[in-house]
Image (tube, rainbow over the protein chains, first blue to last red):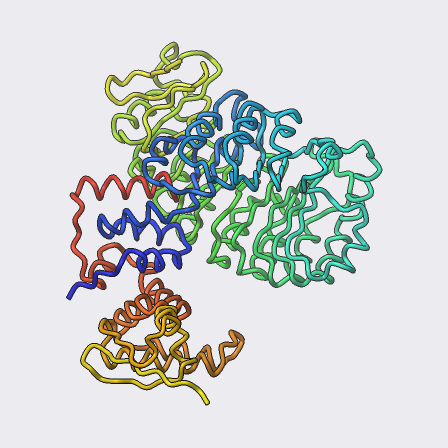
Length: 479
Length: 148
C-alpha cells in the first residue's frame, strides 16, 4: 500500500535531513519529492563556481536564503593560478538579485569580488544579514563601505599574508581576523577550553609583535599548548620567515610531536615546517589515529628526513595506515612512488589530496587515481606525472570535483585526447606561452585544470586559458 | 476537577481524556475553544493509533522536560513500531497538529532515509519512479557535480 504523505509532512521530513547527500537523494525519489526539495532547500553549496551556472541554480532552487560558492582552485593560495584566471562573482549577484530577493547570507571563497558586486549586494537583498569573504580579492574599502550600512555581520578572512583594513571606519561591523593574540602566555592559562587555534602571521606595523609571538611559539610554546589546551581540535602553524635560508626560531618537529601526545582531540593540523623526520611523523601517526585533516607543508622541495636523509615514504605511509578517517592530506618532502602505493591502498576515505614535488613516474599518479575511492579534489604541482596515468584513469575524473596539475608532464595531445574521451569534463589549459597549437602536440602544458560541469563552456576566460573542445579536437577560447 | 473530553475515532470507539491531554493537539484545542467540548469526532484516526497518540500526550502533560532521561527513552520506545503504524502516527500527528509528536515521527522517518539510495527509499515508501532515465541521470549529475 502506497503512503501518500501530504506535502507539508514530506517538507517536515526533509527539514530533518542535514547532509547534502541525503537531500540530493531525496530529490531523486520521484517527481513530487523533487519539487519539495526545490522548495525546501534554503542553503546551497557550490564547490566550483564553473561546475554550474547561476541560471541552472535558479531554475532548480526557488527559495534560497544562503549561498556558498568557491571559485579559484586551492593552489591559488600558493600563487599557482595566474592573476585574472577567473572566479568572478558579479554574474552570480546579478542573477540572484532578481531570483532571491530574500537572500540572507553569501559565503565566498577564492572569488573575485569587485566593489560593483558589493554595491549590488547592498542594494538587492533587503533581509541581508551576513557576508563572508575568505581569500577573496578585487574589492576596496569603498565597496565594503557600501554594504556596511545594510549588513549586520561581515567576516573577511584575508589570505596570508593578511592585509589590515582600517576597521575604525566601520563601527557596526564585527570583523574577524585570524591574527595572533598579543599575549600568548595569558591566553594559554585562560583558554584551556579553546578548540581552534590559528597561529597565523599577520603583517603589522609592529614587527616586535610578530617576533614576540613567533619566538614564543617555538617548541616551548607548542609544549605549553600541549599541557594546557587539552580540548584543542585544530592547529595551524605558519612560518615567520618562510624564505629565509636558516631557521630563525627554534621550532622543530618535536613541538608537533608534543601536541600530538598532549591533545587527544586534535583532528586537524595545518603546519609549515622547514624539515621533519620519519620518526616524528610515525610518532604523530601513532598518537593521533583520529586525524581528519593533515596538511604538513615542508618548505624545501624534496626535503628528506633530515637525520637519516631517507625519503618520507614510510612515515606518510604510517599516517595512511593509522589515520583511517583521514579526509584531507598534503604530501611533500622527498617521496617516491612507494608513498602513492600506500595512499592507493589505505586512504579509502581521502577526499582531498595535495601533492608537491613528489613521485618518480606515472605509476604514482596511477596508484592514487585507481586506489582512492573517495577522492574528490586532487591538486598536483611539479611531479613527474604524465599522459599515461591520466588517460588510463580518465573515467575516474567524472567522479571527482576537480584535478589541477601544474609543471607536470601532461602534453597538449593528451588534453585533446582526454576531451574526446570524456565529453562532460571541462579541460582548461592555462599557459602563458601563447596558444597550445603553436607548439608540438607532445609539448607539456604549463597547467591543466580539469573539472566536471553541468554548465556550458566558460565565456569569461582570459587570453591565457584554452578549453579543449571535443568536437573538432582543437582548442577554443571565447572572448 | 479536570474537564473530560470524549474523542470518537474512525470506527466509533470513544476515548475519554483529560482536557489537558486533548489540548496538546492544536486542532482539538481550536475545537474545544469553539465550544464543541462534549464529543469530538476524529474520523481520520483509527482506534489503535488514537490510543497511542493519547499515550504520547498523557506523557507530555506529566512532564515535557527535554532533559528528562525517562522522556528520552519513552520517545525511543514510542517509535519502535512497525512501519505502517509509524506512518499512521505521522498522519495523525499532522492532522491533530501535535508539533512534538510530528517532529519525533518525522525525525524517525528521516533517520530511515539517511544514507539510503533513491531505490531503497522508493521501496520503503512504495513509491513509483516517475522520472524518465534521462531526467534521473540529469538530476544525478547536477547533484553530484554542482551541489555536493
